Image (cartoon, rainbow, N blue to C red; front, side, top):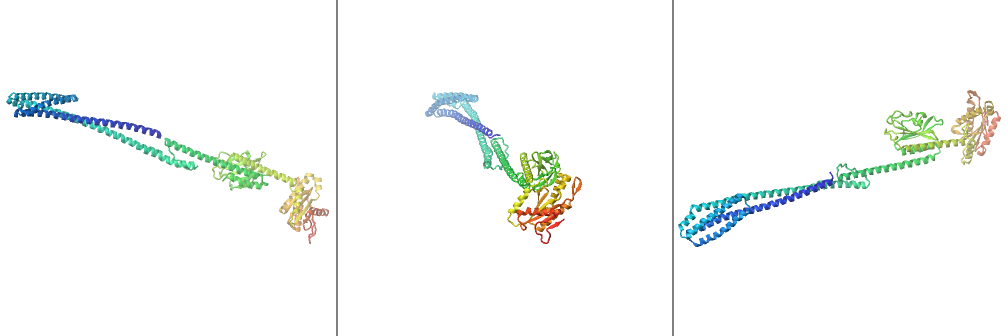
Length: 600
């Protein structure tokens, strides 16, 4: 019940009880007045009855004394008493006018009749005594008639006094009882009023208003300080305090929601900032290994606690290989065919192992850990895959914002495509399109770099020419000549390995530059190249062609000459090898005890 309703009811009941107690006090006062009047009437009637009895006895005594003694003063007293009879008559008339009950009024009338009869007997006796008949006067006053009349009068007076006393005493008791009753009622009403007032003070003001307000004051102060962790008690009262409690609860929930939205906004801004930072660094990458490091660094920050991998396609677009990982994903393969991923098949993000409501990718194991595959595309072609793994099995990765996933995947895909395109352009700029070796321009840049190098590095240059190359072109066609070039270039590249760098100088001529090796080691490497080409069979269109052979000229710097003449000296040695019958290695530097010309 609402506090205002309770207060109004308490106020109304208090007013009613106050009115009733006032009425009870009024009735009690009126009953007290009636009691006082009853007492006064009782005293009045009692005094009047006593006066009637005494008056009759005094008059009779004076008359008797006069006839017995003959003393005039008794006659005078009797005469005075006769005057008193008029006062008695006045009292009787007053009793008649008091409105006494009929029974008492009849007795009063009887008293009056008996008094008149007694007065006549006494007056007759006094007159007889005055006339000289003393014996007759005494006989009359002391005779039976006088005695009977006087007794009747006194009995009537006694009866009247008895009836009047009984009636007035009953009236007094009744008035006193009513006065006490109404006084008790008034006291009860006042006690109820006080009890209601105290109940309102305790239960309403203290328990339902003061205490909740004190408790809410602390809660409101904490909410004002934006401490929304405070617990608001669940008060289901339907009064104003309950409504205030509900309002505070709503305010707290709004504050929590606002904090949640602020936290989400901050996380969103942080996520956008991380994505922007990642984009900037992706754009600054020069190689795919750098891109892989950037992805492995920033993606865990954007999606905390979620493991994952970055895969890239091979050139044939048939398989994917892992290039980076973060937080150790354990339920996907490091490499797999492109057809094993439903995300790549569909060209859109695909979720595996969530509620078993969709097919799972084949590159995942049967552990049931939720996984999310986001394909990387560029220019309409799939070039890689982002894989997210949620090992908590609550599908947090699945709930990642789709917009951010698409944005990240799009930027990583574009970055990978740009790097691949840059690698292709770089390869086209520095490599020979037919053999895959570095081209003449790259060779010139390498020699210029070595020339500018002020350190005392040793450089060995090998000029290689394929023997009788024109014969292959004429006999088998230019396609066969191209195959020969690719075959020899592959053998040279594999043999040199990390010891040097192979270049296509032009036509059928190749060049190898090796640094930080001795002349003898360089010569041995050249012989290894020549022997490798000669001993490796070459087949074209299903039949063995050959054998193939090469001539090699070797020169070195700086001991045998400057770097600027390195190519010319190696080319001169090559010419000597070709003039000496081909399939030979000739060195343009002193070999010590070893011959400068070695035949195959």
